[in-house]
Image 1 (tube, rainbow, N blue to C red):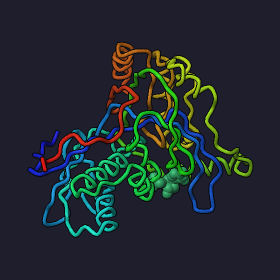
Image 2 (cartoon, rainbow, N blue to C red):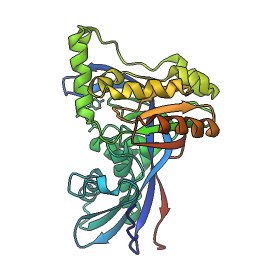
Image 3 (cartoon, protein in one colour):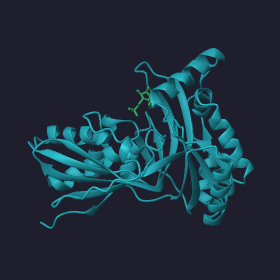
Length: 314
Ligand code: C5P
């Protein structure tokens, strides 16, 4: 783990990872995106972003996955900060420390969480007083998954996944995430989904994406067994096609007693729902012994969206 000190005067924001409990992918649109119907749950793996005024733009990587953080202008947190500076005519540059505990390129929206956190941190640092819906609008221009980490909890996503609506839910759910050592590119997984649909002749009659009544019922009742049975991801066949080892991993987790196993978003992280914290510990031990993934992380959901954890006194 890389330790980098937080600079004085920094604003620090914490943002959560997500898992898609259900991801229904509609037909490919003329703009290349797909209409989605999805249900997000924010889970207790977090990145922390600290922003400080600096004489140039810089990224300071830290945390579990520090070595995998891009430090150039492609970093989504930097793009978020530059976007907000440009829109509100702020002529300042920032040092952005990213303390990364969310797996990189894993289908858990880690880059999106960083962008969401950077928006909130800049709003606070520059005293802009933006409303949540203004932040969400900016977030959507940065990526389909960026608005959700601002909201957190459980939410339904439509459009590109960026139009959010609240979901009635109760209870806390326990997860084990099996992390791969190589990431999967989101565009590549969507392209593979299209290719498989073309191959099977189903591309012309892809139904409109809709979330199932079973999943919504399971969330409303807080029943993990029903939720485990209702987990669904239309991108899973594409992820399995690109990475056949993931199917073996998913099957192993279910055999070891998970209530359900699913590729998270566009993968390659595989998410397993369990009955309890103890059941998550047991499942982690079994999966570690089977040696089918690089790392295992336990988490619970839902958790809160992005929030300021420290700011200089004004
Ligand atoms: O919005 P974001 O930058 O996360 O999207 C990355 C890529 O994922 C897009 O360029 C597109 O190929 C694919 N995508 C899609 N439909 C969506 C969201 C993403 O096809 N609803």
